[in-house]
Image (cartoon, rainbow, N blue to C red):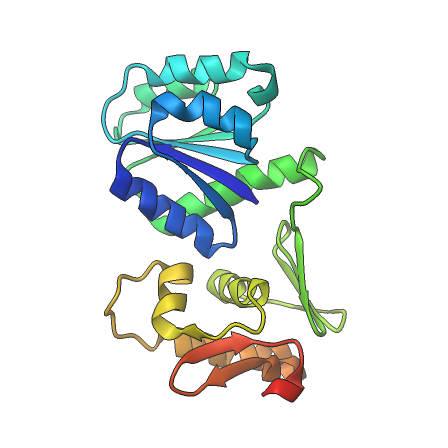
Length: 233
């Protein structure tokens, strides 16, 4: 889905954008909170993330202006607030935010909040027609909103990270990814981290997918790819 991320903090903005892109979202980076209204009107994102780098007494005013704009009135807004107190969070919710998450936070918590808001959009029937809610590859079907996995019509139970890994590979079918690329995109691991986490999840995924597990291929000297056709193994 299209997610806009607005923050005056370039580094933090890039971190959030990377997390969202790793989940298959198309990300619009807005370099200044002052430009939010104009760029949101032009891009019409499915979700807006407003990330404060410090105390910003103007944030409630910005939220009220968003809600006063007819074309943005129903746009889901997730605010990232650096303050840990509840008073600031309540003021943002009262001004029009749909949810508030405080810094610092764990990436899975942030992504779960994003998924929750996007589910509301889909359930309300307000998602743009081009929004992808189902990914398919061969006999494998991923339903992104309900986070269900079907293999030849059979339901398969995956962990959250297994689902996210499979969704990322399936969305980019036939593309080979280096291990470090997948670790950064799905787990948000920093570069240079030595871990067998990815390989263990791939092994588990293959077992759970049964015969379709052969579609999750090892690319020797590179990493992994998902290809819908076993003939390309």
